[in-house]
Image (cartoon, rainbow, N blue to C red; front, side, top):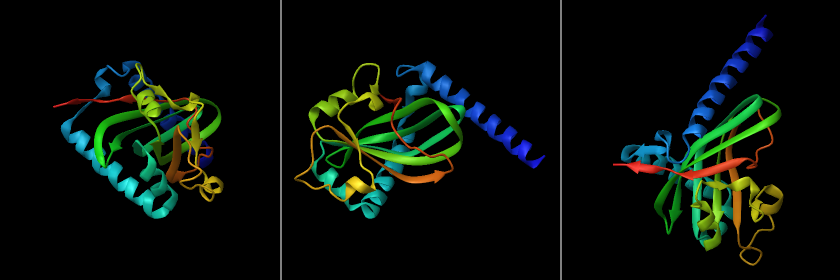
Length: 197
């Protein structure tokens, strides 16, 4: 009975999460869900800065990337859930020369063998102007389809230096909590949030 209750709870949680995700996606970058207030923007900025500082302390290679990047896009709180159908959602800030220059929403959808809930953050280090332009493309930026995206895992981090850096975008995941596995950015779309003052 307890196992059945757990599966029912998991299914209900995933269904609720996917409903929220569907509504957010349907509204699109110009919809009311893409708007945020100045107070919300400050909250996103605070969380994003804190997450970035934690990342620098736990992963020194992130600082190497930051020192050479044109911009850093940080999503401190991505929530991922699913039961066959899945999705992930969260807001973040773009930093250029240590100043927040924009606020963004990360949304992704997936299908396949998956069940559970997970929370994590990720940072995108945009190494050139082309990567910055892609971020503000009309209709949003589909990160997972970018050919010049490099996910920095523990193996690659050891060989990363200023002489081996290339153009494009580097991604680092952090603060992973939960039971789902296989973090990735395939199917992820990033859109800019309009700030309502």
